[in-house]
Length: 247
Image 1 (cartoon, rainbow, N blue to C red):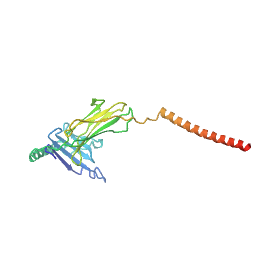
Image 2 (cartoon, rainbow, N blue to C red):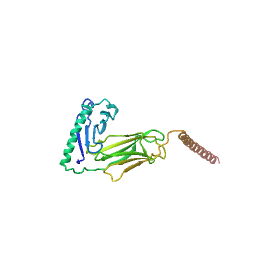
Image 3 (cartoon, rainbow, N blue to C red):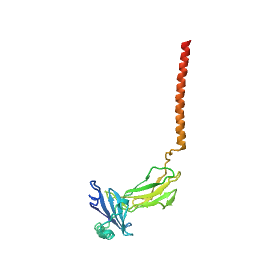
Image 4 (cartoon, helix red, strand yellow):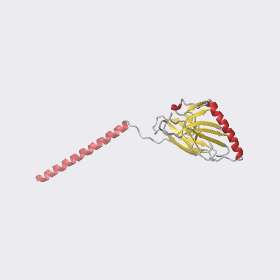
């Protein structure tokens, strides 16, 4: 861990018996403190998924998954902020002990994919993932046909992985249309330049409609014609054989 960031992970049995019953889950309280923006973050991870995070502007918990809307942290925003203050003090101590050594920089791996199979004219969601980066500071933007898109965009907090690297998702609600070209642009200090991944809707299989019915009907008629032809051919051979025996 470098001097510029300080991470603390507290593994606690938040889910144990009451939430999980006989099933076991990996759950963590994640506190993040660093010099740059975001200078603080708190969230709860369950099996690698963020279920809740603290909105320090609104001073309340926000559920990322609807089933956890009633979940609240003991002490609320004041309790979380008190813990954050302790970590900020620890960060200053770490920087002094390390003689202000620079922190490591790991660039993200980027992937773009749709949430559902693509069908023209049907609403869908594009997902852009920046994975395995450090420190947790990354900018992610969507573009459609070379123009910046801001409507229908959602972005998550920073998800911490078991190796102390991070991942972040951004989502774009869209309606697939032929000819559209989407791209996710990611900026991180581990990258030498702005990185972009492009995605274009693939032509989906056609839905069942008049064309499919006509095609099926034509195939059926073709099979029937073939069968009739074979029957007539057999009868013709039988007639010729009968004539030969008659002679």
